[in-house]
Length: 143
Image (tube, rainbow, N blue to C red):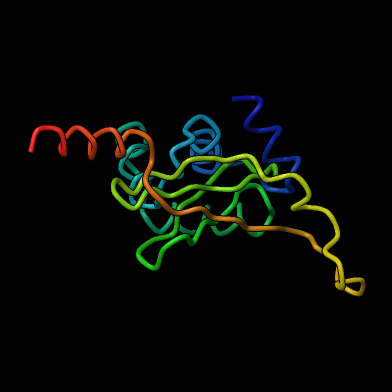
């Protein structure tokens, strides 16, 4: 828990029980959860937690660069507690989101953009994950 408190403080976020619990959850669960998933999973341990508190906490954390908000699809926003530069892959079959390394040179200066300062790169891959590919291949074999 002390690591989570230090993480919040390093991002200029005042620790509270709810902020600590939400940030700890995001740092420990690499599943890129939605607000509803965070709320549902934390509620048994924090019965006074509300969805509004989760929304407001995530907004504060995002404003202070303590997490990433992922808007990969139009249906929902997902959250990632790991803010080091990386890409994401979303499976069109199961909807799971995976962390992916950034290709070499993505964070380098882009030719012709001398007057711009690049501060972030959001890169999303979309396709079918290996688990879903195996399921599809298995289904084809049985048909």
